[in-house]
Image (cartoon, rainbow, N blue to C red; front, top):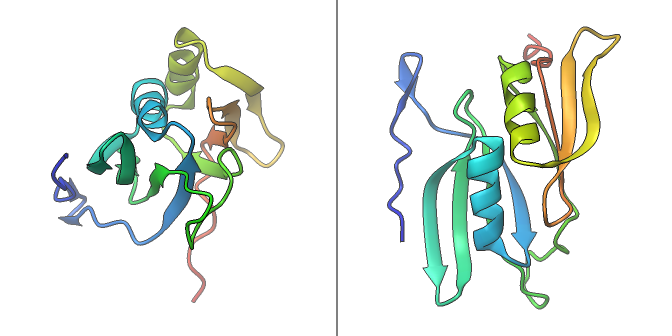
Length: 144
């Protein structure tokens, strides 16, 4: 079990995500390895139950978000089929990240592209089938 290390500084406040994507995986351990080694996420917490991952939290090192995942259980109350998620992740150095995923032989769904709305982005499919898009578009600020 990995202890929660969610105390690093982000700007002048502690790094505390307030929104998490949730994913179930047929092989959650392998997906954790892929997401850390290939995509660059950081494990903040991992709780195993025998050969299953009961709960894990992976954070994106450039922002205040991440995702939670665990081993798929068909009968679970919050269960969704593995490979059914999609996410967009903001990165400051999309070119370096793209090279990283190429170097690891990731399945490229969309090559690095300059979009007409000003973003530079690419997309990959992880071994479970989930889609991950990475780009420079940071979204709109909170209205008001």
